[in-house]
Amino acid sequence: MGVNVLTKKSLIIIPAFNEEASITDTVKSVEALKEFDYIVINDGSKDKTLEILEKNQFNYLDLPVNLGIGGAMQTGYKYALRNNYDYAIQLDADGQHNPKDLKKLIDEIETKNYDMVIGSRFVEKTAYKGSFIRRLGIFYFYKLIHVLTGNKVTDPTSGYRIVNNKIIKEFSEYYPQDYPEVEVVVDLAKKGYKINEIRVDMNARQGGVSSITPIKSIYYMIKVTYFSLVRKVF
Image (cartoon, rainbow, N blue to C red):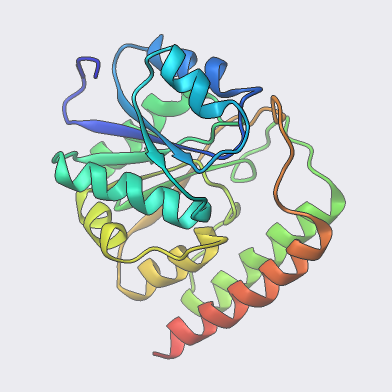
């Protein structure tokens, strides 16, 4: 692990499933900052992702089977808890998240005492241009969260987020297995945790194929709505 020169210990968690096209550039961009520890969670990849991690001697944990984004991230949070990190940051392996925004996320959570800070494409105008269907889904979840919690989260599906050690403990004990981003926001808001958003820049996917197909998008909306309602009630 690299030496962390920031005030507190921060771990970047990089979940990776079949990301052979982008994982090298993603990890090297993080290593170039020389201020963060990181761990790649290889989520049972069937391509050359594991081979690349081994060849480059990157820091990684290898899951023997694919657990999905929830299982991969929970593995990372368990690792963060076990190694006494103050903050944990999710950074996607496909190159969409800009590592230059890492310091902004840490500064926001550290100086303003938030429990979670989400990197948003919409809290301020950015160059991001997603498909109409994707933007419609994001708006739907924005409205759902607002109705259920009173919180206004403009980019609820963003995976670029940082949490403090209280949330690391929460997530190490329970984390939704698939499409967790919206569900955990509702859960944390219900428990009274402080959540904020800041502007970040998102890149286009640098390789590979998104796992979210049109059919899965419909399942995503139904599943997340159901579990968010259940969490609100109970």
